[in-house]
Length: 356
Ligand SMILES: *Cc1c(COP(=O)(O)O)cnc(C)c1O
Image (cartoon, rainbow, N blue to C red):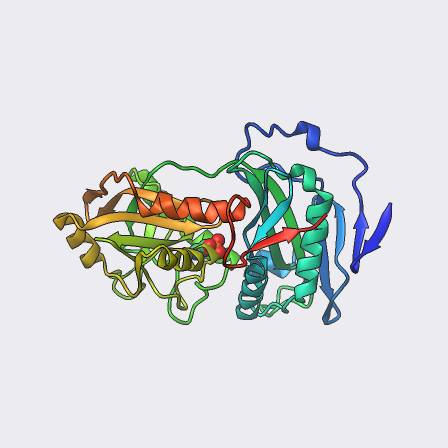
């Protein structure tokens, strides 16, 4: 059956996979919903988005994505509350950021209504896949890549925008041990670190593997010039608490403008927590660890929300963070997830209801 709503063409799956999903044992991002959104860019314009049964895609071997890595993505979630109403969190910010990434990678920008109407229609169709269990959610992966053909190293003339969704359990990794990176860099001035461009993550895998071989689970990225300023934690923004002040680096070419990061900054201020957005050096953090004023370090991003760090390694020495009873990480995570799951008032207007 093919119906059209809000300028979205919908081709429904004939059978559902929902019975095959074990909602009590969901891993992260490894099983998918019945449908996906596909929107093609051809002849200089984005065409009408289509929702089709979730399926593999066929590409020409010369498609530019394979050779030049022209691809970008977003990461977001849909949450169900106790009444089974469905919510997104600041979705327009994801749409805006996708277009910031698109511009940097010479990918044509996507109309906001294709993104929002497509996403909402897809969520309404696959609503049964959004887990009900608190802490679980539907992970949403919008992405755009160069499907156009040709070995010439230039922007493609055709692109595909796809949204695929994966019901996911809570992303709790436990407290992690991280290594401050001193050789490799994630990003550089004038580079693409602020974009969610596919190759940024491929470039992180090898240094991360080296850190894993040494017994760490993640890398703390530092500036590409001297490896002296702390920038991000894996694919998350990073917060450092010294004394009672919560510090994070300023966004830049090298530090991605995370939606979780900016939400945490606003919530922390409203909670009376002193915050500072400034460069923070490795020396300052090591000194604070030595004199006992370093209280917390945590990563911040959509997948894990807040991921507390237990230990960091630097130049062969491991520094443990204290176990705190009333940590900022736990407090801030509760406030932000209560807003996301419609368990608390949302004075910020961040929650976005996906109406039925
Ligand atoms: C996606 C991402 C983040 C977190 O952004 P959110 O909008 O909070 O999910 C931080 N750093 C990097 C490098 C990222 O790719």
